[in-house]
Length: 98
Image (cartoon, rainbow, N blue to C red; front, side, top):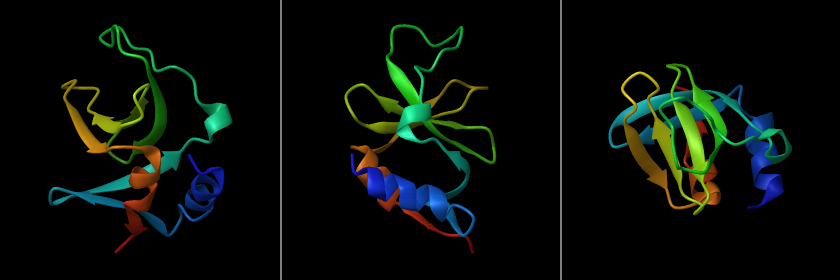
């Protein structure tokens, strides 16, 4: 992962925070620096090593699986959706707020 790419994404989050995926617009509320990440833990989250990388305005978690891919988790329904094959691809998906 390119730390500079992540730092730029965090710095620009105020104006560049939208991800469009399969026709759905998601607005990121925060991105976590690598040094601030911890293993994701929840009662319903068992046997999957993942780290939270972002949260959106609707309370969805964006996790990085130990295999590298990024997926979105809805904490209410516990549904998962893979968004990107790696963190670089995920960060490149972030665009300007309309």
